[in-house]
Every structure is written in structure tokens, then in C-alpha cells.
Length: 354
Image 1 (cartoon, rainbow, N blue to C red):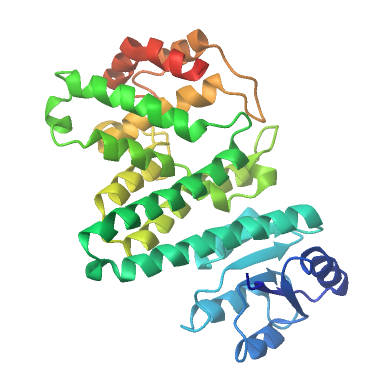
Image 2: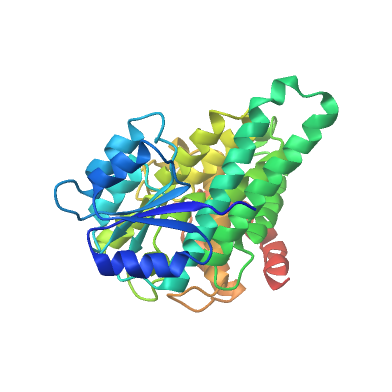
């Protein structure tokens, strides 16, 4: 397999040396000490990924990424920012401009190597997905199944990577899918949501839940896995995973032929942190302003978080989790969906135990 090429751009010679030493065993590595040299080098050679320092004289990383994303030839290059600052505002600006991740300096060489490996895998899979979809209209029916299987494999791989990073005990994605199936079937059987659920494709909806936290791939480990209380800035960074996730799915929508799955996924991504009383995020929606599937996902996600170990807490018992959700009726949760959850909570307990 051809070795991938990585450019490291930093005005600090030590950082360039450490980065090159860490990555040169697996990749072709080129070091550059300024943004201007990078732009000149890109006229002749396009790398597979760029590690870009934020704070550089003459032209900083923010200025560089604006130029790269403004040109068709360089807009698609994955960029990871290197920074010595713990600055949530700068990070959000960088992510909004198209950076795929942030790495804090001084960095751990093994961690740097692993993060590069994960991001290059994701980029390779996105490219494969784009290539397959560009030929979708020309494929015969027998090829359609192959495309769907490939898409599912890519999504499953990405969500497994995220699951292992975010969930200490593992299995959050699989459990939430199973919880959601139980709750949706109860909602379908209920007279309360008969009209809303009449057109639901439960299998498709359940499958799409695996993307509900996909935006967390852009959240730094020291925030995502922080064992203590988050600062206001850190919490704002965590909250950004909803908008990052929406943007990610929108990019897939632009090249995909099947949109129902992605539309469901965007609903889950954007609304499972909204609260019935309007105190949630990202949009502060209230009561029935929140999509019904987002209201259901809020209960599913909170239940699994409560009964699972997290870096900041030990797992609650099933009974404690049920009590917390019951107390949250009309505040955090849709009271009708919460009542239906209480009816099937024993099934949730069985899934959690498995």
C-alpha cells in the first residue's frame, strides 16, 4: 500500500522534529516552518493530511486554513490544528472553518500517531463512499446492495471508533439502538402517538440513531474524557458536537442518493439534547417544538448515560435511573414519552444487563 503523505507546519523546530520522528515510520513526512512555505509547497504537491500550528508569525493557522478552504485544489485536504492554547473560542472558529480536529502541544507521539491513523481511515472511507455514490445511477440493481452494505460498513466503523473513544465500557451505540427500538414500538402501539408514528420505518430510524453523537469526533480527548466538572468554555466545546454532527451529515447528503436515513440522523443529532422546558441545546427548543424522535432519544441517551460508568461518575442502578427520568417528566423529558418509558423500563434493564 502506498504510504500517505503528511505535512507538518510549525515555526518551532522542536515540534517539527518530534512530529516527524513520531510519524516518519508510517508516513512520508515533510516539515515546513511557515504558512507561506506551505502555500508554496502545495502548488506542486498535495498531501493526504496537514498538521497546522495555530500560532505562527506573519501568517497564523486561521489565515492559512481560510486560504486553503477557499481554493478548489486544496479545499479537501484534512487539516488538524496544533496549538499550545486551551482556547475553546479559537477551536470552534477553526472547526467552523473546516479543521477536523485539534491536538494540544506538547503532544504525545503515540497519541499523535493514533489520531492521524483514525482520521486518515475516516477520510479514506469518505472518499470510497463518494466514489461509489458518483456512479450510483449507472449501477444495476445487483450493485445497489453492495453500495448499501459499504455505506453501512463505513458508518458502523466510524461510530465504533467514536464509541470506543467516548464510552469507557463500550457498546453505547448498540445499546441506544436497542433501547430506541423498544421505545418506538411502544409509542407505535400507544394511542397517544398513533398519528405521528403511522409512517415510521422503525428499522431505518433505529439504524440512524448510531450517528446521534458523531460530532464528538471533533471534541478533544482532554475535554471529552475529563473526569471532573467542565468549565463553561469546555461545556460550550462539548455542545458544539451537535452542530459539527449536523454539518457532517449535510456533507454526506450532498453526495448520497438516499436521504431518509440521513434526515432521521440529523433529527437525532440536533435535538437529543433539547429539553421539554426549553433549557436544552443547541436551539433551546421547548415542548412540542422538539421533534418527537429527538424527545424519545433524549430519554434513551440519558438512561444509558446514567446506568454506565463515565469518566466523571460511576454507574447508577437501573432503579435510580428510572427514578431520575421519572422526576424529569415535564422538565427534561416529554411527560407522555417518559410514561411510556416507565412501561417498558424492564426491557431497558435487560438490555443494559446484556
